[in-house]
Image (cartoon, rainbow, N blue to C red; front, side, top):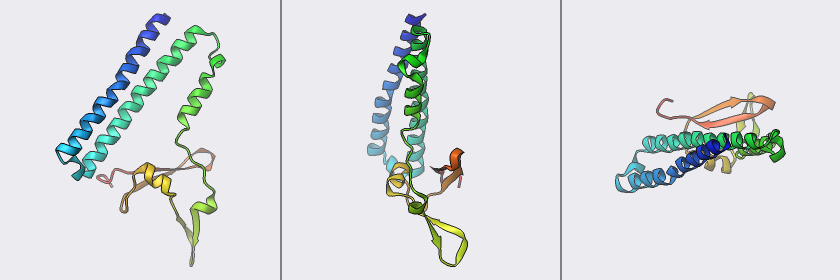
Length: 151
């Protein structure tokens, strides 16, 4: 029933608000217990928050979609599919290959990759960090900061 889905949605939204309390707890640990001195522990805490709350927000959005589907025979009426696509693509950036890759003089088999400053900032990269680099569909490249503890 729709009323059940709306109740579920309300519960999921309330769970997402827990993020505020969790960030406040992390802030307290950083400030009061010198958590900022242990970069790996702090990074793991932040990644954990991102992962858990990504799941919670996805769950809330899925419940929202289910509620809308119960209201309307065709979910495209309200543009659910386009909202989902927009939600998923918010952190994509497009760059020209010539702005990212430069030839290395005397080394025809390799190129130098320059990571744009906004990507460095978004990923929280520092000199010495390890990156996971993968290729995706449509000849895309995905960069992720690796867990330095595991190499």
